[in-house]
Length: 246
Ligand SMILES: [Zn+2]
Image (cartoon, rainbow, N blue to C red; front, top):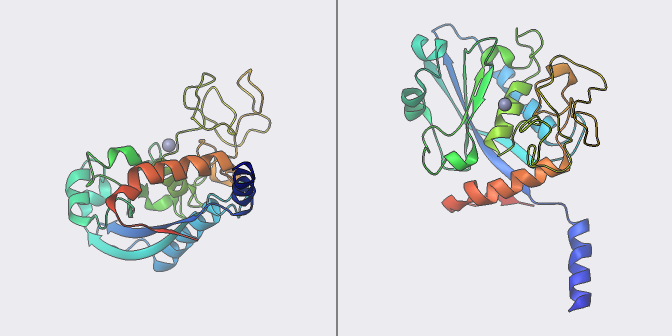
């Protein structure tokens, strides 16, 4: 019994957690003039896989994204105010079940660059499940300090169950992840050595779930990867179709 437990513990250390393959539906909404190229979409998907794969720094969360399909919609009203017409837009465009990530690309503003729903909202609002981003925040876009596609990385973090690293400020339980030190308030710009809480650890200013500029963002932590897997199992795997692969 004891030996069996030891063996399993050792195996768990060696075997990396399973990969979560997320089918990605990309919905391009514009006002008639095509603004987003296929190349830009591919660059965005690459940014997602680089960020979640730990290739820019930090941990490999084991989450991977693969385009399942794309839609093109010319609708100036949805394009200019996608959140004001969220229900109608998503009702018309959303594809797949609980494991499908629907990414809507339209125009928001400088204050709200993106919006993502939490996995535990799926059960009551399956149609609204998904992420909306401003097309100018995509890699090479015109949002000056948010032009590497990390707005989508951040919002998809919420979709996968992650909170902001500044959630609850310095108070427990923070963001519910042990290896992201607490911080009192969101990070602006790219401050070095920011440390706003008495608890050990400097503020996680490079974490994708903070608010720093894209050029300073580079990492998720192993703890965030674990939280994603817990949320995935609890809220997104329950529709019966497994997307877990080695
Ligand atoms: Zn956020």
